[in-house]
Length: 168
Image 1 (cartoon, rainbow, N blue to C red):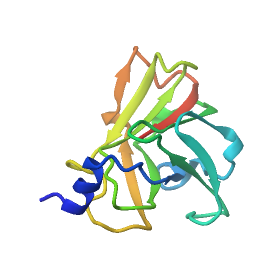
Image 2 (cartoon, rainbow, N blue to C red; image 1 turned 120 degrees about the vertical axis):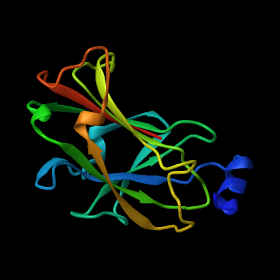
Image 3 (cartoon, helix red, strand yellow; image 1 turned 180 degrees about the vertical axis):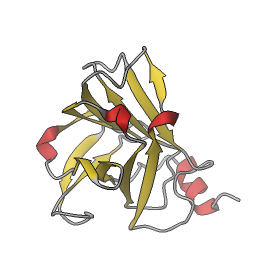
Image 4 (spheres, one colour; image 1 turned 90 degrees about the vertical axis):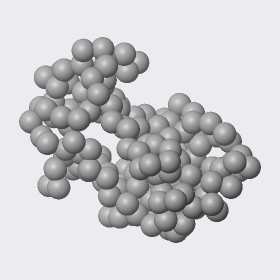
């Protein structure tokens, strides 16, 4: 049964709290793709991004994504990666600042185009809310199976991937 505290807050349209999103995007446990240490590498398409030196898994920083009230939060980074289809999954740590607000999903996209017209995407969902326990201040590890990612626009793992994006 959904937590009534989370659902009642969502119904009252409280502005979503910031979420440190994420820390250490990896290909398998041993291949680091992104450490989220440098805020200047990320641009906000919606909402805002900020440097977080308080909550992080490794190093001394993470990137905090804050959504606009009642809307989407989105952050994008330019990369240059090849051979990603040789791996089985991505791993990413996500920190939840405030459990009072529910998020239905986090979407991860990777693309060989600047406008994401071709991309692989994966939406992390857990029932009606992403956070199933009314706990603030926790890290969650998500594993994204590459073979389960949705292909849009005939993207190919043989292409050089030049953008990654996270959406709330």
